[in-house]
Length: 204
Image 1 (cartoon, helix red, strand yellow):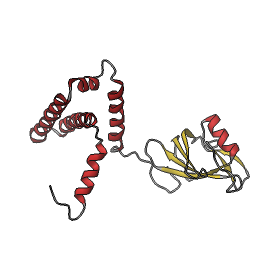
Image 2 (cartoon, helix red, strand yellow):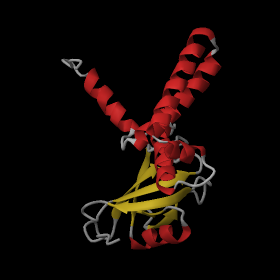
Image 3 (spheres, one colour):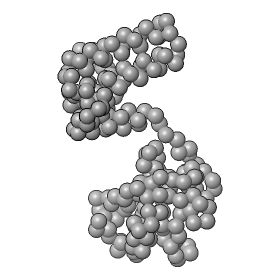
Image 4 (cartoon, helix red, strand yellow):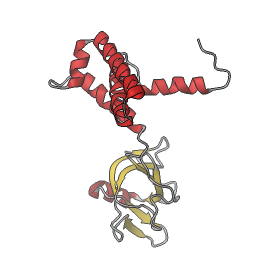
């Protein structure tokens, strides 16, 4: 990394993001020493502009920000620091410095699941059910989507909500496997739905 610390008298802004929830937690500033210490300890360290010294987030409260990844922006003068937060981030006791809840949106897991399935597709490890689906071919994958869709319908009509969720989850999983085999992503379905939601969309 070639970070330009010269633009702000030795400092760069550091945006802190929860790597799991994707929520922005806070903004701080780092100098070269704080940056190096963050890399060394894996605990986010800032430079305090008021106290004129380094401070590691959580050294008093225990609410550390465990660094996972650091990226620099296109101008090399701003950092994006992805972390696992330990407890609330703000000194006021809230999850973020904007008073927002750092909650995880379960819909994000669909993308993570497809990332995992794509890795299975690339590596094809023995003993994996997903691997066996890819080996069985497109017709079998499509058949499984149909089977799980039918079971979902049956549970919706005659079953319980728990069983409906179970079968619908099976259907989603097999659909993502099928999409992966076709070189498509679950996000492509979301994009299609966005288009359909726009005024003036005409079915074709």
